[in-house]
Image 1: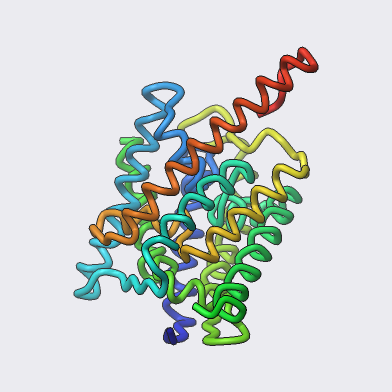
Image 2 (image 1 turned 90 degrees about the vertical axis):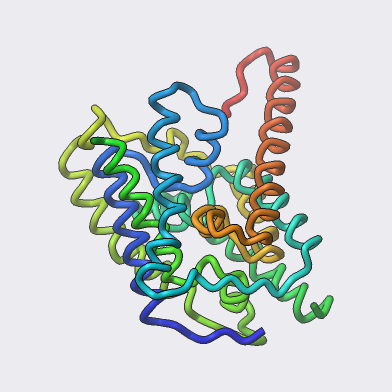
Length: 143
Length: 151
């Protein structure tokens, strides 16, 4: 499935993601890692720890509606794979981010930004994994 | 007051994800499909995010402490081990299948999209499965070596 190359929107979106990451470090001193925030929300260590995670998740989920207000439509979600593949993929993502202790936001943005060697290795590893899987699914299996 | 600010920070992130196209699996997968229908957009998302976060973190860390807490909560371990590499590689394999990563899927859960819901439920199942497996491994190691395995 072809998608339109959107350098301006993607850069601007990226700038906002960066801004949010910096603001969270400035306000609470936490990295903006989606995996960590969600894990701590599902298994909270204390009620104050749970509260800020609930607030930030609620904020994240409001984002698409601000987008709707600004542009008149919700963000485009096109899924070129089957539901079974989605379920399997989701499960593997859950396992991987737990063992790898982070995902695109935690390692890829926050960790890379402070030049954490651990995050650089993690980011290179998951980017490699993704590239391999996309190649296998699209060019070897032929999805 | 603190929670309102934290909510606003989440909102900025969610808006950023919405604008960037990261929540669109077709677009994300195309970034990795250089041999096919390549769409370099994702690189601009990462680039834009790092462009702000790298200097922003530098300035924030220079202040010495965050606004609401006594100190920064940074990941405690600097260990680069098999768990980190294989875990991340595994995440990549899953990302390459689903096209959603956790940070991109979480904001759009609210749109009621069924694929996002499926991804989120199975991801959380995987998350708990992995935590259980890690706990089991730690228990076994405890029994063997009689010291606490690092989590």
